[in-house]
Length: 372
Image (cartoon, rainbow, N blue to C red):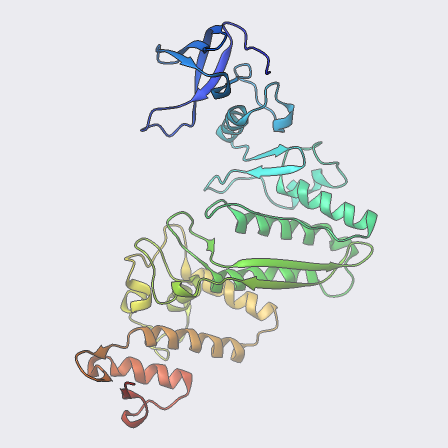
């Protein structure tokens, strides 16, 4: 039987108010009655009878800890209260033993960069302030010491910040291995693959402006001394349905908007009327994202592609395919016939798609499609 909470102690109880966004509220114990539970006053002055299983003793006011295991009283409510207090001070990372919990701040914070990495080198987990870099360091030094494979699992719901966390981990491992890397800076090339993967696999959703719409497993090969030898990324479960349709307030994959905004040959690809002119981009009513410069991101994408050995002609072929997909989305068919025929108003879109795909689109080949 759990210990009885003393009279006058502060506790957390479940918030039964349907309109509340808080899972727990503070209350003060008046007395405990065997077989009945605790009599207590809530913060709004109401008296309640609460079962022992529905309340947990609170920690002293103002108490917070970098590790939830350091709390005097540990429960779901005290852990949430601790993380909320840290988040209010822009401390988004908190340990629970050797697990790192991250709260997405949805804003840039000055806690990243090479100068922020150095304090974590050779430090045991828990010595320095909780951080993604601490987890990267733990995996790195354990790898070098034991010569055995290490795994870092980044999980969470949509909008939690998995993509950004993974980038910070990769950046730290590349920086940490730099002194042991011989020859070409493979670690840096590994990082430059991220803009390419994000462009073709990430999109704005209602909860996240840079949401990965696919699963990703990254395997980094390292030498005995800890130098990066290479990396392989496996992708899975790509959300293909996003290409022809997006919900209100969301966007298609980044690359389409970047291409329309930043490609130097917009006229040649027939992109000069802007993103709003394409059915695959205008259905949701959102073609731009506040704080995102699609044209600048397109330049970064081209640089990243070049750094990963995609030459100018290869890049252009890829961009032609993306442009052709946009034109395919503008093709409409005439209804009300046993035979499907393409509307003459959209024949230009068909012709441009055919040109970019390098296929014939004359009337005998494509404009009339006999049904089954």
